[in-house]
Image 1 (spheres, rainbow, N blue to C red):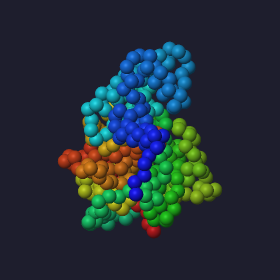
Image 2 (spheres, rainbow, N blue to C red):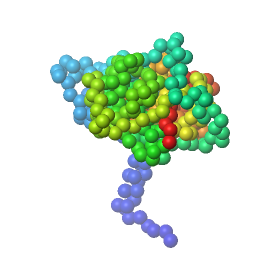
Image 3 (tube, rainbow, N blue to C red):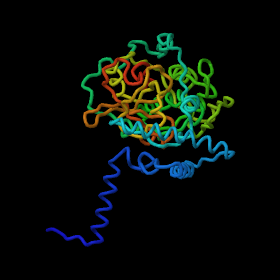
Image 4 (cartoon, one colour):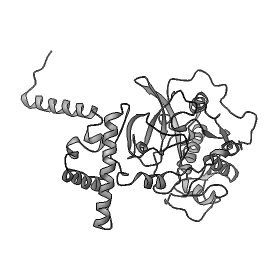
Length: 361
């Protein structure tokens, strides 16, 4: 039976349809990218948009001069975002909390992987206590079409490293949290701050580090404390270990995924979340807002993240990457990065330096 709509119901229906259509127009919709075409019409409109952005992200400056300086940076970033959204098809950029930072400022504050590219082989030596096979998942076959460790309860909520270059610690912790949940059934948020303060042999706190070294530290130092027992403070502090007073989560060691081998990375990812390194120095990373990222980036690894699954949409295959720039960045803190690019190192070098912790049952 058909039902007639009243004039008021029709208005609501039309309004809903229009809003739904606008929401699908990704690069044009204010709610997704943070601006509308009208906002770019004049300097006055731009400044109004800037004021709204300041309010949304609770930003404040010490002087009018600083505010005007940041407004100019904001305009330049907005121009880049808008021009990019007109050209790309599979992903889009948006105004986020980093919109008042130059790209050089952003890289200095939020990237923190420190690695000598010429010494990669030595760094990636396995420190696992069981050396029978270098790569545990070599014989894995029949990979599923998709995997998402978030849905399996092995991924904690997205965290925020802030302006401390500690991405390496967040990448490490995400992988350890994952294998601990898989083995024990308990999802426990662990302490990045402990690594920043205490893992000082090879790693450098807020000045960068490497996940393999952090895995080795955790394995040889009796585990890692819970986040609640050793909370994050966004800066380096004195190492305060009180293992006798609070519980720790342990690992046996770690393994490295064969370098530049996407199939091996997927084999490992089917079994657990991984620590991976990427080149996140491209400007689009700063403002990534959604979609399957397939933009320009190099392979000089400078950022530690965690791979927590893979899948496909509309024929585009991607790896699900958990970042540490807070839940307001990207897709609620995540980025989907295109895989099957035809390049052994993968997009942004994601296949170059993947590794994972091991834990005995």
